[in-house]
Amino acid sequence: ETGVTQTPRHLVMGMTNKKSLKCEQHLGHNAMYWYKQSAKKPLELMFVYSLEERVENNSVPSRFSPECPNSSHLFLHLHTLQPEDSALYLCASSLGGHEQFFGPGTRLTVL
Amino acid sequence: AQKVTQAQTEISVVEKEDVTLDCVYETRDTTYYLFWYKQPPSGELVFLIRRNSFDEQNEISGRYSWNFQKSTSSFNFTITASQVVDSAVYFCALRSSGGYQKVTFGIGTKLQVIP
Image (cartoon, rainbow over the protein chains, first blue to last red):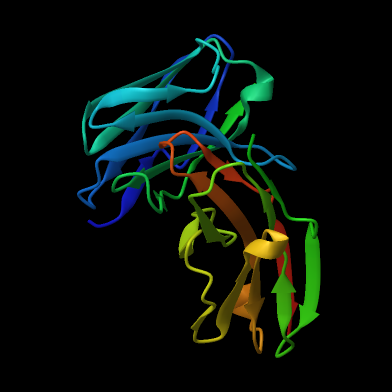
């Protein structure tokens, strides 16, 4: 498998649930990113990992918890989310800080 | 602070027409990078082009061309002889040389090509 993959593609969860989003890249990149995409708003950068170390956390609420166990995998752990967290969550990777390659996204709905 | 403005939120053209998507950026950095991405209905953003701030040469790739002008802080994207498959949301983005975190995306322009 090539490129950047994300699972699941769709997720519906209640406000008290705990779930995780998974991202995997097969491009040999050394940086990985989580973005949130909401309707009518620019892409919001949430977290950046470089060589498995978090280098950026854009004031994201603690109910979102990222994990990067190695340079190919990135997780976003979700707990006690709010309905306004419903959005498309995109994972991306890059070599250094150059162009990013995106996964297909996880469409999250919080009830 | 960085800013990317895509003033056109939605554009509709008839197939085979040419269309230009505008992108205006703001940055205080002298070294930066500009990008265009395409997001088809499937949701996955696809990288189209990267431009360095010190290279103002315009680029053409098939039906796609990009016009980078530092004097007006613009990085416009033109599709020649548009096709239905070009229908997507197009994002312009700016990254400063100072690290991974300074990536700013525009709000996107939704292009609809009508057969």
